Amino acid sequence: MQATKTALQRLLSMTTPPPISNPAIPNQIIQHLRDHVDFVVRSSDAYDEGYQSEVKRFAVSMRTLFHDALPFRSLMAQAEGLQGNFITTAITTAIPHGADHLGKYGGLIRTAYLDGRPTYYAPLDSAWNARWLSFSDWWNEPVFMNEQRAELSRRDLALSIANKDGGSNVDPNLSDIYALLSQHESPGWVQSSGEAAITAPERAAIRQIVHETLRTLLLAYRKMPKAEADPRLAAAMLKASERPPSLPPSQGYRRNDVCPCGSSKRFKYCHGAV
Image 1 (spheres, rainbow, N blue to C red):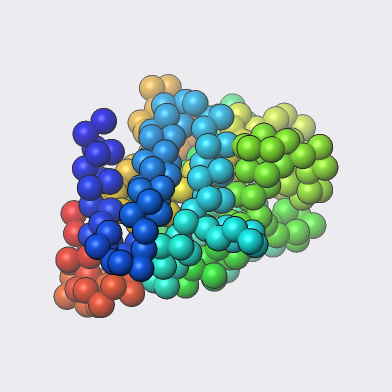
Image 2 (cartoon, rainbow, N blue to C red):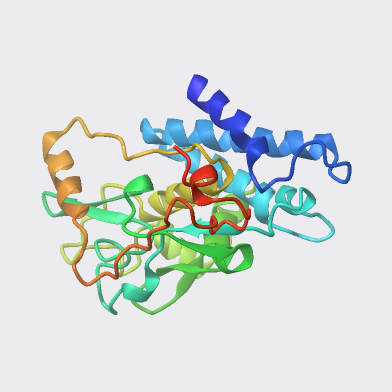
């Protein structure tokens, strides 16, 4: 897969992780890091082709990359790769209470309707907005909220899938919030008709989180949602992609500005490169 190979070759030009020549970072850690980024890129491609169970691979790699569980440290922490900023496409501040939860009005995912039933999908590079946050703020930013105002962060979602929903362990005691989410029983996810969603919202959300990760780590990585063969679904997704006028304008970055990732490079030489 040439696109994947090219993206991975760009990995060492990033500000995170540092160059492989850094004597403080063992080559083995860098190789493990590259392996997991490769896993995520390939799983993303497979998910976009319809293999939605790839979310479990996403979650395991996200946990390995980012989650510290003492005495173990994450790969990114060992590679000193958490100092820079991370891209967030969530628009949680613009979501009115009672809205179609993080669907049409923001959050990480979009909601398209076909015959009255919702299909949730990741907007990838068609996200309405993008900001930069420190790793801690990004990892712990609330990205889900049900009608009871219970919140899940990126960390919560990734660890729930990886640790509890069959990613690497199967925990019969799923958290109440995640259990409702993944079983489509939360009032925020089931339509008034009682019909189940066509696609799962938590899967679309973890897909978008993975996309944010790849956009942060791989300078050349770009991807748009796959065109749907079903013309009715394609039309529904096109309608769902219409930007709500109430949302604040997307923050732009001039090519000669310092890149907001924290690299000290000009934007055009860093995350603005195409």
